[in-house]
Amino acid sequence: MKGIILAGGAGSRLYPMTLVASKQLQAVFDKPMIYYPLTTLLEAGIREIALVSTPEDLPRFKKLFGDGSRLGASFTYFEQPQPEGIPQAFLIAEPFIRGESVALILGDNIFCGITGFTEAVRDFKQGAVNFGYYVNEPERYGVIAFDASGQATDIVEKPEKFISSYVLPGFYIYDAEVVERTRALKPSKRGELEITDLSRSYMKDGKLKVKLLPRGVAWLDAGTPSAMHDAAAYIQTVEKRQGIKIGCPEEAAVEHGFVSQAQFEKMIGTLPRGEYRSYLETVVQRKLRGSK
Ligand code: TTP
Image 1: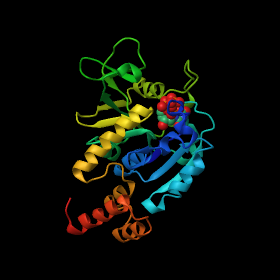
Image 2: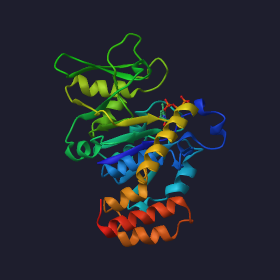
Image 3: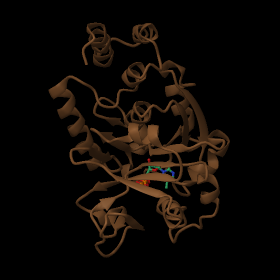
Image 4: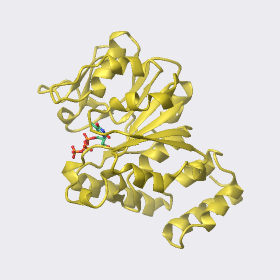
């Protein structure tokens, strides 16, 4: 399966920080925000990745990741001239998708814990798989309606009346039909193509599966200063307690065998001395000890 990271958008809620760097390049505790969704894709076994961002920000991402070979991955870059909706990524990245199934993750979404994404990617055959996450304020998101048997029956963007507490987080899996189905979408009232409309199109044809994320999974989106701060505090708490990093793409790459241990050690040698490098050295030690 291929992967797309959508990392454009206006980031207006982070102004004036976005005068300095785009939202997804801002720090969330000890690493740039985009490291988290990138690691989620790598951990799910996805190494062919397209990054979609604004014409202004794309060069910064290219500089950060290059062709992806350092992570044993391959990176392709596409411009989104205007933020005209999340599914637009599938139209822009069509030459990359080339008739395969694809997972899309938003560049400001952070997932921690046992999400089941790896299994969902591994077992995916056709149609669409989306996820449901229980939140306190569902009305801010795309909300999933269920029937009595627990089958998803509708997805409603920012509903005015309570429907359910389950919403769609920013990780979606679709088959190769995604490009044609996106082409058939009409812009919403806010003038954007909506991911909820795309998933509803699969749902209408009985081709959408919604998997509920279990309790204990953290889904954080870092779109406001306060949400960024909360996310950083969460990451710091867990990392300090365990001495294990969340959102470390180099570690995910070596754990999945995308790079060999020798390549990994060589790469570490090129990094500046500091906490991040020291952590990667502990990853090597752990691997040498054969401990989990
Ligand atoms: P949002 O948080 O909805 O939008 P934004 O990033 O532009 O922020 P703001 O509302 O503060 O202006 O977007 C969610 C994610 O999707 C974010 O990572 C940006 C990305 N995105 C795009 O890259 N292109 C788009 O057309 C849209 C709608 C979102």
